[in-house]
Image (cartoon, rainbow, N blue to C red; front, top):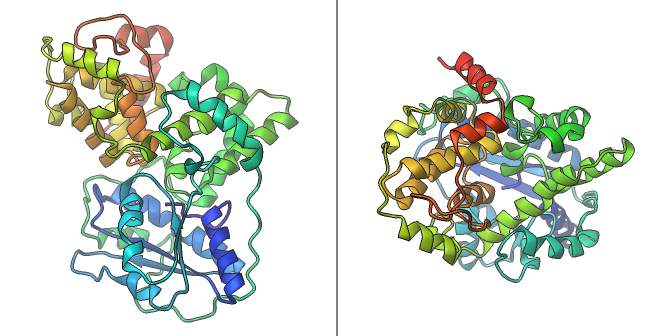
Length: 433
């Protein structure tokens, strides 16, 4: 899940094991055509990161094997072929998607040690002993542990360089051949690559540098104004592991200190809210269930389950951005085209889906489908947490109203008051074909 050569605790641990065993280290990354919502968009973003990873690992003396499984008929036993010659396996500790499934099932099939290392969070997920109720309960625990974990990752120095030939199933990836590789895969070709977000650690670091120089000083004032473009837009890179949250946190702290800025609100989102989402995913048996909601939210939604909804839109109408609400349509079009919605408008996007769906359960299914299929940063603890927040997760009761009960409501008029919605809609519509 963390596709990078630097700021990677799992890679550091693997290098240490290799050095102690007197062996070289090989990194294996596979991309299959069978994962949920596999598409040109997601495949392209992942493949764009491969040349960076290959170059950086080579400089460290670490081998890198990338296998692109193009068709369902292609072999899917590559990992098990490789571990026959391995002394140990190190992978990512990650609470959702394929990694969670693999970490639960693969170790029992191996005869060698299998280590899952958390390099997604700053404070490792396992340091939290239970699921936290909200940001205010996890915040003091994270702050207490930050001095131990908010520090650079040790440098990697390999004692034995990897110099063995790679097997024939290795896939060479270059910027030039990515479109052809994607076209050759049995995936959803209707979801096109994002024209805005391009994968890779180099691109991620460029965006981080740009954010620190231009927007960190503006973040606290303008992060909820989409037209100001004051956010970092780093979530796709954090999701695919092209960038480390630890790297971002230390860079933001350092920049703020040098330029006498306040970075508290940005670091709150990165170190508290994001890690609250990972905590939720770690302790949830099913991140796509309303059973995760606090009791007050479940009760109030059930109480208002029979409330009249007018209009009701089908999931297909919502997917096509065919509602009466021009702002909501613009947010959905941003998702369809760019692969990401600004965080503040994404909350509005989710709230309106609840209002326009037959039941809360249907609204949840629709949101997860749209986010996981189209969002580059979908299929992520943050994504599932933010969706369930729309139903009351990590929130508190508000004034009771139809459909929502005591769950927080967001209105079109409120968006007009708080943001420059008209400018946002003009921008999105100008890009829409």
